Length: 65
Image (cartoon, rainbow, N blue to C red; front, side):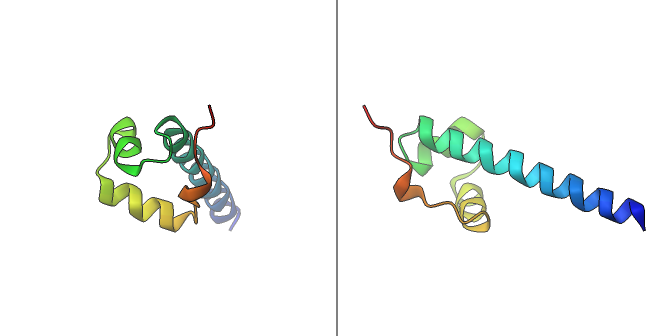
């Protein structure tokens, strides 16, 4: 049973890393998902699903200059 709790911990950690990478790419792309998908090397649809999965508010991710 200890293995399953360790696995959940790993899954949570990987999800957090993925979410941070997505947010970073969105910030670098000024919130433009097409550009963020290119930065991450994934398809736009895949990014859209992940943004939805992690409940990321893209409208708040805008580069302020």
